[in-house]
Image (tube, rainbow, N blue to C red; front, side, top):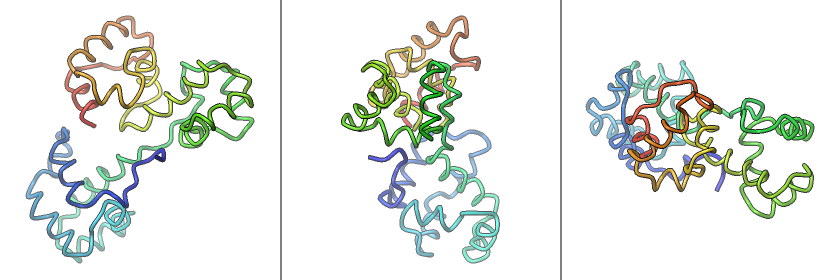
Length: 214
């Protein structure tokens, strides 16, 4: 499995179900309007998976052109484009993770590894992780921390600061988050972050429900 979701294998129908079950912010509510009918229009114009949808809406000009071709509103397509792209979050910079010591960050940078996708390819598999462990001269615990850091950073909206909080909690992998009770997760993270040692933002229960569902 790669760092990012493979958009080619997620059908348009599956993406619609993802949107139907996700929490939409007020600025995203347009997505819920006439969803079934609008997705039928997308499919009628040759969009069968998320990859094709991303390509059809790849920039402003493409959005305007697709709107004219399909009669779908531009403002709707702009928000839809953002939703698609949110499932391929921007690479996070390794140097921004306070949970890592500076020495490890410097060693990674000298190897040309500066972002989470670059690091993921080196730590996702145990064999690759063992190679990197020797190259960095780090122990098993430090190597596993790098793997878990990359793992949870694949989740939408998990920035380096919030990742640091998760890595110091019982929810330090995607699987553990997926299987979590979001209420219990919320309570533990709030307690752990009482002095805002890891994360300066506000943590609320709805966000944790979103995180688990995502």
